[in-house]
Image 1 (cartoon, rainbow over the protein chains, first blue to last red):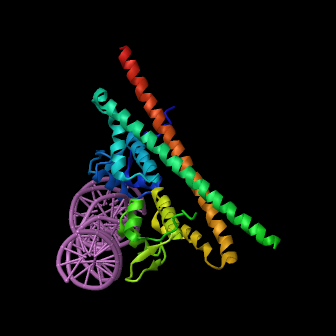
Image 2: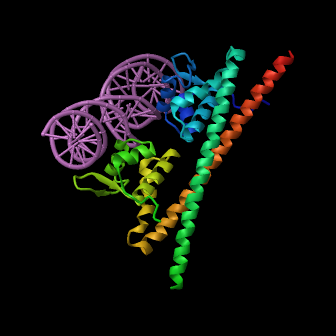
Image 3: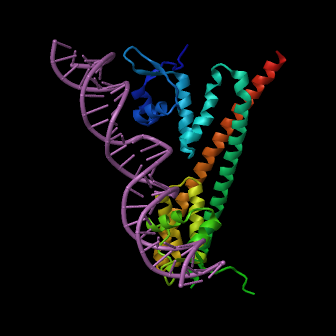
Length: 134
Length: 134
DNA sequence: AAAAATGTTTACGTAAAGGTCAAGAATATT
DNA sequence: AATATTCTTGACCTTTACGTAAACATTTTT
């Protein structure tokens, strides 16, 4: 049973399912982030499974505050499937490694912020407790 | 010995020490993020320890991708030191709690991204290893 | 005292990431 | 066939977070 939904979709449906606007998707294509996708008879854009995966990946990164310009670099990862696999890969691993450590840094930053906030919260509640004792 | 550097500084020095521009500092004041600071004789801005702490906190949040508008809400935390401590505090704890969970969410997101990237990296190196065996 | 550095405000410029028409073509629905 | 949706490409508008320049005041250095 091939229940896997591998059917290509059009821009409107895709946008709705990802809760973004069609403008956003066209914009990503405009700046080269999405690459040219297939077009149907009248010129309508058609998105296949891979295109959708790519878009989802972009949104995931964007959600983490990574700029579209930076995503563009990272996003080349998805062009592996195209030719030049052997020549492209070393650079790719480099990019991946650098991004792994960047993510680690960000996580450390967040962790530190969390501590700050929690500590601050404790200070306040302590203060209030002492106030209560009068 | 009062070696604690509690001496107020001017905008240029402050900017340099935090590696931002004076424009940024003035802008934060412009949008109400920094609050009015003291002015010296000729109108020159003067920043004391508290001002600097506040600015550092702002930069910390900004570095994590939180928008200035959002920071503005959170930043009210620093107005505790002013009066109305008792009335302001419940709201404050609410804000803190909500931000703690937001930070937790972000950290989870990053953690998931990290997994994705690492997994991807492994897939590539494995592929290359198999290629090598020919 | 003159020059250089630092400060002030006001105001326009800019890049990023889309939003929002407009006008027309293609497809789907009734 | 007529209407309604959904698509297309432009083109201009908007917000955020400052950059940059102008014109002037103040402070510091020489």
